[in-house]
Image (tube, rainbow, N blue to C red; front, top):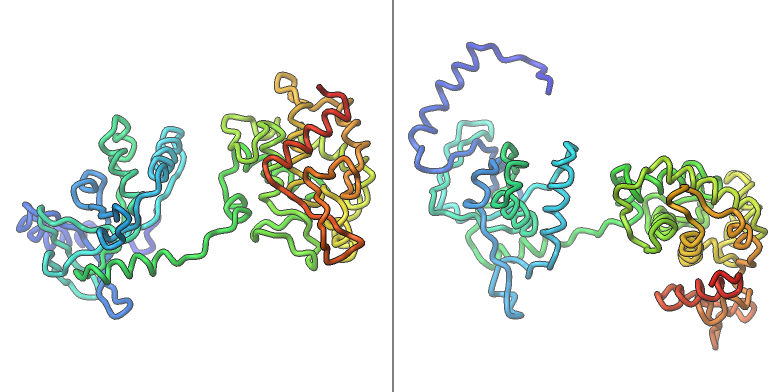
Length: 391
């Protein structure tokens, strides 16, 4: 960390001389330098809490027994705290950066002391008997608490955790604060994947989007659905499913431990071969996005299953049965068989599995409805394997 204006040793000594008496005076309490801010007609504090104080300072009060008024937080979501804890452990053990968001807590202002120094700078003194009630971050709190108390506690022993402290003692207002803070829009999966760590399934997905012409400049990387008017056919989420299915026969396997570049090379070669030779996809594959028309894209997405998420999932699950992990390659003979399949919705191979005929279609010329259910996908894969004699 670089300082723009270096503070001289003399100035540092002056500051320590000024601040130390306050810490000495309240040595029996917990003291934290803080910042005072105003928001929503209330006063709030920003403090940083070292790991050693975390467990004893914060508490959660989740609702129980189907009674929202029995606590200040929602009931805990089973497994979520464990996911956060595993995330911290995994990155810490690999010496990789990690981050958890600022927690929000509340406390009755009468239960703490605030020593103001001016310019919004203060010292926050919290009596040892006082607990801060979590408003937002109950799962982060639980994960950090369990980690500190475990044999892996040393991994975060030197870390600090920021807390926004709302000076609020009213129970109903605290519940309202929780509700208000929970009204954030869920992030689209494509956006989460696009900003994911370059490893495993995420890393391979990013490689495919950049290296396979079928996906390059034709993939929506932020939103949950591709916009035809922008000539986008796929989303990052679609391609992530294809990758996961190709190597693990599952739509959401993180593929931990897999070599991103070796696996990417194998799948890029396989897909480039497939899309460039398949009659249903060769035009879209060979044509740069700027030369494709909106009508071209709309027609492809409407007529070809390989322009849909479920179509890529079926392809991925079939590719899984052609992949040799020992040799890191896909069976060219079997890929050639997949290339020869008619991937249009009209093909009877897909009837009554991933393609259903609507009884009262809006367009009688196109009465096809896509089904992405687990059973439909399994039936489609089975139909192809029977047709190709893979059993």
